[in-house]
Length: 356
Image (cartoon, rainbow, N blue to C red; front, top):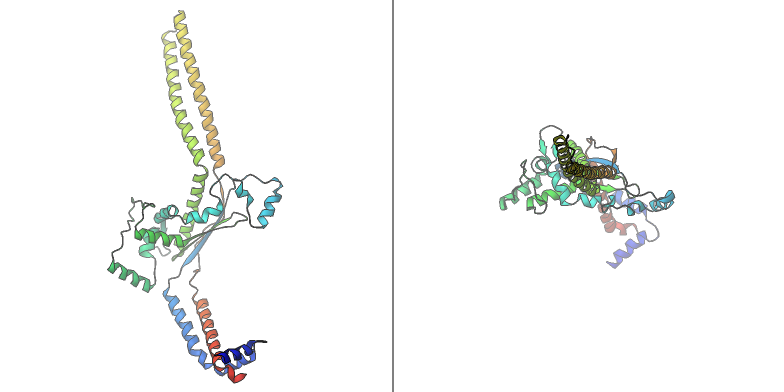
């Protein structure tokens, strides 16, 4: 054993003896035919059984809520090192770097169950969860495995009814598996320098992949808008309700004042005039309160509009023309090359003494 190691070491100690390796390969070239061909063919046949999958990508840039850095010098310097200082100054707890974690959460994935999709051939149109569990093509061994597993133990029901809402807090085993499947089909990447969000979705139908990417984009936009405007929307609701109450009081005071004036128009007694002044003061107070709250409502609506972020869609989802994988020819040739390397190493170890 030590002698073999010593001879192999001498083969590559000073330099790789390509001439010796080439002679061994040429002399035993027929020994490569069967393993290389069998590996290439076997890999190709295996990959043929795997359904093709397609990928669609959406890119968008959210509006930044961070204040501008003075002169931009420090921000630019930090950006060159891959650090976005602007995000440190924003009041948002969820910054773009957290979006990939957000999109892996159950609360984000579960609503995607009922995204309406349609296959390219038009054979199916319905919720994504139904496509994922009943329609999408699978490898024959996966179908056999699922059939066998269902014989052993009946799976938990997956309710895909129109009015049924899955509870993300309590999922059964089947629902959990679907969540993992959808989570694996959605990927989110954020450029730390520019905050550009790239959403990539994968499906075994090109049209479904594009529709899913567009739906995830809309859902992420809506989540960011809801998060950033939550307090402002609460203020608007509060002032709108208060404004409605005060308007009722103002209308009531206005009606009472008008009725009293109409009923006592020709009377000159001081007591009537005093009562009229009291009605008028009540009307003025009601109007002042209503007017003040209405201004607050307008300010709250302006603040809501200011807090609502806008998004620049850099790249919309498009239906992919070519599948993203599996790459049958490339993987087959790669495995054939690996088989070639293994056979070469084996031949060198076995016959290297003849050339030393």
